[in-house]
Image 1 (cartoon, rainbow, N blue to C red):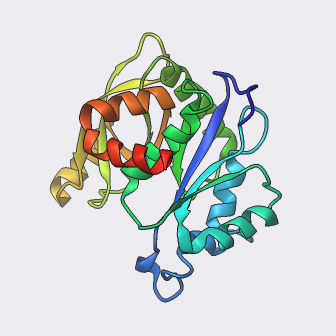
Image 2: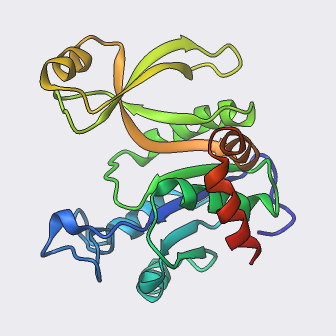
Length: 234
């Protein structure tokens, strides 16, 4: 990005490394679900990219498998996104190395830039409400927090993680501490969590500064950070 990037700028980071095998045969390794127009006349990836376009956003960073680079570049071109940076994973890993790599890339220009990290295959109907929530989250991110988005449960889903809502942060009204995370509870626990008003589904969408993410990973996952740093510098 250009030197004009400021702390007020938000960098969309889109993880598009999934193989989509759960929707086989429509979605498959060579053409995963995020590249299909499943919910609109655009692909899931294109819809995701367009949610982070406009005033206040830089061009997106898209992390993808090496074999999808040309498909993704073409899909971005189709929706008029010419300022994206595509990071390639030669081998598919889990999310943590991809997130770390994107944070390192952005930190080269501005370690205090806010990253909005999301998957390429989400369905979000109300973009205006999403942007309002994003601005609230960015306040906490600029204060050094790593923010996750919670969703109101609609069913006792056992395949999701649940967030227990903690106290509101004085420095970021509307943002609450995470009291704890419960991963993929059993049916009885999920029924209680979905109805008690104190728990949300963990969306898997996060907001943080590059500096904060790299700081936390250095403290909690240095074994991930070291090889990613070597790959980026190489």
